[in-house]
Every structure is written in structure tokens, then in C-alpha cells.
Image (tube, rainbow, N blue to C red; front, side, top):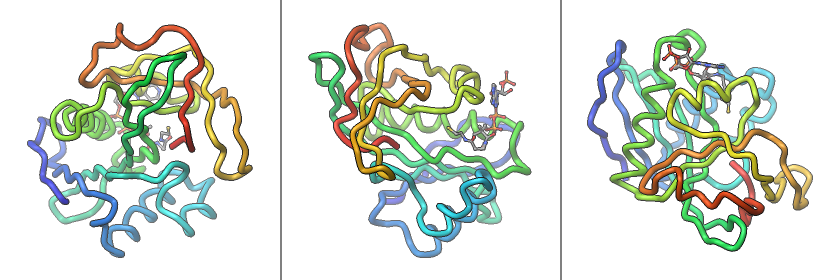
Length: 194
Ligand SMILES: CC(C)(COP(=O)(O)OP(=O)(O)OC[C@H]1O[C@@H](n2cnc3c(N)ncnc32)[C@H](O)[C@@H]1OP(=O)(O)O)[C@@H](O)C(=O)NCCC(=O)NCCS
């Protein structure tokens, strides 16, 4: 499924496309790998082999320039996780990237705004979820994510073992208000992180 989402206002004329993982073409995957190499050059060795990391993506959200150049990307997958004793439906988000020459122009903000619309309307979940470096916590906070202090358990795809991951955990309210996130207990991703 490839869907053009309603365009939200931005200074750059970008078109949002939501694509199911199975509908990605080889051309799409090449473009995504090139964008990820440009945005995360320190992981070039990884992105020359693959176009996502961790738990498999279910959908990709792309922002495209009118010329077709890929400006920004993220992937996500819906999953029922456990927080303490409660089951919570989330979309786990990963590989968030904006082309270096377009960074600092609200493109990342548009990507996350379009994601939120998608998670509220098209593919409803209670919350979006991701883990990130401390250096980008402020970016996600400005887009409506809240940092959660609870520990996160997941299956590390590289070391092939269950672990407690200390990276900052960020939650985006989608269908559910943020104050309904279970405030106590371990966040068990029940699989690989994104
Ligand atoms: C992180 C990234 C996605 C941000 O995208 P961007 O298009 O440059 O960000 P935007 O211009 O949309 O910024 C939106 C707001 O967040 C702020 N912001 C951006 N990066 C920030 C950061 N690292 N820390 C704090 N705030 C940040 C901006 O100042 C802006 O604030 P404003 O609306 O008050 O002006 C982009 O820089 C990128 O792809 N980086 C390399 C890959 C990466 O680190 N991805 C995230 C890994 S989890």
C-alpha cells in the first residue's frame, strides 16, 4: 500500500508517502540506504547491507521533494508490548533520518507530525515509541514525545541476547493521552528494538 498523506504546511514543498514494507521496490530500498548512509555516515558499513535495523519495519514514511529526491525517512512497526503488567499497543519507530543538506529546516518536524497523524488516523495505536541518543532527545521532545524513565528490555539483534537498554526511551501519544501510559514497571518490548 502506498498512500499520499494530506500535506501539512512546511517551508519546503515535500510530499509524504506511507509505504507498506512489502510494497517497497528495489529502487525505494536503494534510495533509503543512500539517505541512511548520508545521515549516519558512522554506520555506513551497516546501511550498505540493510535498510533498517532491529525489529522488522512494517511501514516506511517517506518525505519526497517534487523532483522525487528522498528528503527524509523513518520506519515503524506496530507491536503489543508489556509495561509492568499491562499490554500496550505501540508503533516502534526507527531509522529516523533527514538528508544532511535539508537538516535544520523543519523537515524532521514535518516527518514526525505526519507520523503522528498516521498513528492517530490511518494505523491507530496508543503510542509511538523509540529509543535514542541523549543528543536528539530535545528534537523528539519538541515534536511531542515525552521521555520515560522506566527500564527497557529487548532482544539485541547484534549480540543475540535479551538486554536492558539504557538509551533514552521516548513516548509519543497517538490514540491514547500521555497520562494513560503505565507509570510503573519494566517496558518489555517483547522482541527486537527499532
Ligand atoms: C535528528 C534529525 C532527524 C532532526 O531533523 P531536522 O530536520 O534537522 O530537525 P528540524 O529542523 O525539523 O528541527 C525541529 C526542531 O527540533 C530542534 N532540534 C533539531 N535537532 C535537535 C537536537 N539534536 N537537539 C535538540 N533540538 C533539536 C530544532 O532546533 C527545531 O526546533 P524549533 O522548532 O524550536 O526551531 C536530523 O538532524 C538527522 O537526520 N540527524 C542524523 C540522524 C539522527 O541522528 N537521527 C535520529 C536518531 S534517533
